Length: 370
Image 1 (tube, one colour):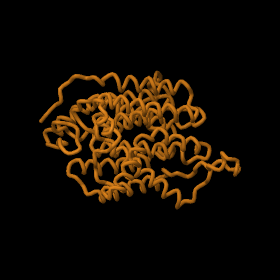
Image 2 (cartoon, helix red, strand yellow):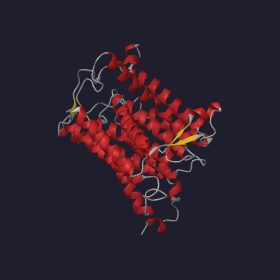
Image 3 (spheres, helix red, strand yellow):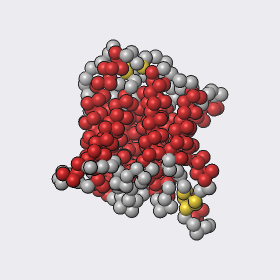
Image 4 (cartoon, helix red, strand yellow):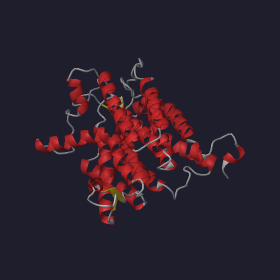
């Protein structure tokens, strides 16, 4: 029996986004230092050198704190409300989102502990994406671009199941790797993930979209990331690792699909929301194109990402982060505005972003070293 029947002061599940955000935030703030210390004792560290910008070994198991924070929040909500999302597990394809994200998290965790071959990771990512697809996370509709030129009357296109499968799996694998590829500076991937999560939260809360389940999951993920960022700002005491970057990318990508791309009424919104993801996507496309022209393996890391280029232009690490955060924040607000998200939710996004990213940005704490 849900506890809420005895706690009348609690808001309804549909209006509990800030509670989920707060629980995940506090959980992450508490867990991240513990995991940092454990990773140091286990010598699971990211060593300096090569394309890495840090000068001392840094623990790389931050994804565990984010994953556990989301899990703790979900379990608490089930205990309090009897379910995690307003429609339960049958609504919003929650099973598919969390099943695929859990698989991808453990693949990344294995890679953090002992590096896996690139092909093995790619196959695992495809498998996790297929699991999510089979559980209902599917791109079923796309905007017909000819509609805007008056060439056709149909605004959206219903996709053939095979095309839907290819697009869904391709999108999930792409965004999973895109977030991992930009994870090259303290607070970069986490900050970008936070901004995208806040953008989805604002968009999915809008009355015209009516997807409180997706908004609740986005709010939970945003809280978990914000708590982690307190230890991940420059100078970082812990990194996301592949477990964190994969988990964040996959969960955000799957949430966007489940919330917006399986309904003809929100297909247009789903297309526009890609704007919120555009920074990691653009960086990834440039990386693939660059490596292809140079005859290098696509998965081979290099020091030519956008943040590397900004650093070489003369900006400091923190100045570079400000530029990227502001860019991503602007893109998120553009996506929210175009999709018609209510003004108060855009303000919510901007205020939360400002508090979360700037409150600890100039932290002057020493890095914990082994």
